[in-house]
Image 1 (spheres, rainbow, N blue to C red):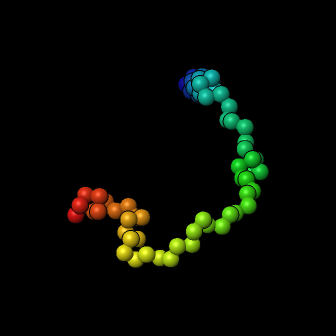
Image 2: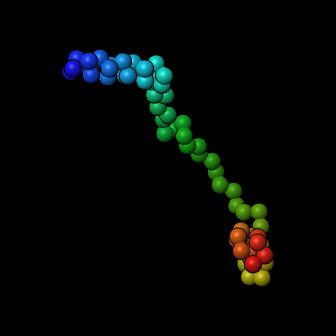
Image 3: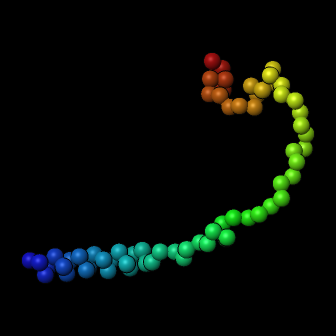
Amino acid sequence: MKEEQLAADAAAAAVRRARYGRLPERVRLEDMTEAAESTPARSAAPYDAEGSWKHYPCLALDLGL
């Protein structure tokens, strides 16, 4: 019985290996990051309390509640 279980486990492992193969190559941290100089904002407009609600999505406003 134990030998049959080992054979079944080996067969299942072979099926997984055939289906999924191997893991993808590891991505280096240097390949995932990019250095870029920051640029200043185009306009430094003052805070507009009356018009600020237009810039934030709100489900209640979208539904007209």
